[in-house]
Image (cartoon, rainbow, N blue to C red; front, side):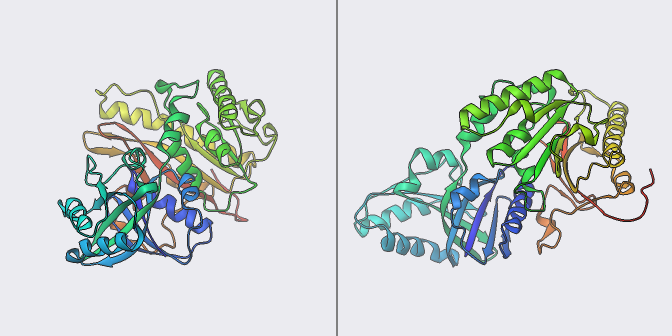
Length: 411
């Protein structure tokens, strides 16, 4: 089976998540094509419920099923044949989403050819070269026709039809409608939290996820929505209140069997002890402190000072995990980096993590993939970078794995 995944704002992060979930779901796959907006992949079996699969990953806008590979001059004829074979005696609504391919008039040309064979159609032209999820949903394209996907790979064109679109309404609702939001303290978007959970390399059913810097509770929220046990802590009583209120709201809105009062507790992440846990955690998924809000006029000296403080916090946090014998096999951490006048500043923490027997795991380990096409991948540090346009503070996503050894850990 051939599928195309149309990627979100951070394509590298989207691809890492897709690969992780496919491996976890025991798919055998081969990557056929990577563009700035798409991933074409061959699977050993069909995705049985594509919408369910898409709903559990945060970094993919839509999934298309590839039904043909043709040269550019053959695309119009192939689309015409597909429609005439599959859509007779009904009004056909269609859109065309193009990736790394021009063909500016193909939608109108297809509509003209369909009229010749007595197929009544409506062509939905999007604002961009590809249709967005809202454009597909609002025009009822998946129920009354097709969003055709065209992806160039060298001299060939992958031709497919969209079979699932991201539930953008749900993401927006559970982000902006929850009762406690505090943008000033930094907020992890639900999509990023969902992706981070999906980057855990092992099967996560019946496991417990812990967020020691829980903030507004986004990691716990996303874990609860996929029926994962989770718990969180924070040094701030206000953040604990935020998380509990948001989880209570989530429980009501989504009819979840969770107990917010039992899921969250007040604690300094740098002093957490084994006895503090009602249920022993298996994994940590968290965004650490990103530093103070940026004004935009910071200089290099100020950035380095902030970095030194956060470095100390991160190292001390992990050191405490080790010394307290809290057995965490994997940590998925969002750690800040800074982009000042086109120069990047990273936390010097990787060697310190190694001293504590935690190695950085390459998210593309054991995967045949052209890493040069992964724009946000830091090949030297084996991390993925995530930053919004014109921002100073970005997130660097780490996958840390505990290396079990009989050697004594020296700090």
